[in-house]
Length: 157
Image (tube, rainbow, N blue to C red; front, side, top):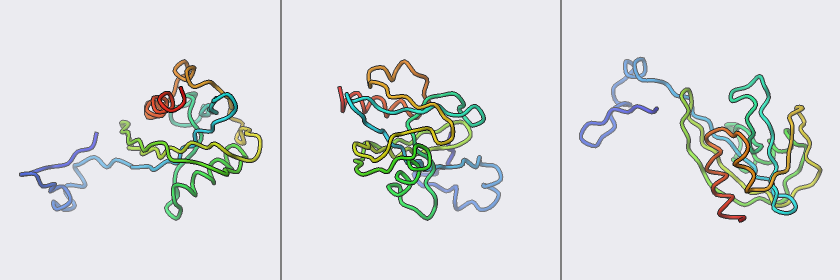
């Protein structure tokens, strides 16, 4: 939940000074570059989150945090190389999804990757699966990923 104090249509939280920062919740905000890798027969690649991280064991579309010194597009290329050992050749923007969890806010910047070099493998030992878009709803995903699945159904089916 994001809290702001509004008086007569004006956000005054930032004008209230340090005491407001002490009483208002400080929510971490994370930008994430997400790659929906499209393979043969319109199957997409998903990976399973490790057991020692937030939202452990859930399936997700690969990607990761955008570093402060890089663009979202550059983060997409870097993350997919690090996670799957593939080189993105072509990607098109799919959607931008803001989502708030209890402890943080995330914005997913989602790209459809339709051309890449290499064979995707889980570089950190994570399971990797190709799955048909209609079957995505049978897997457990983080809540923020649900809008990606909806967009894919509209785009591919």
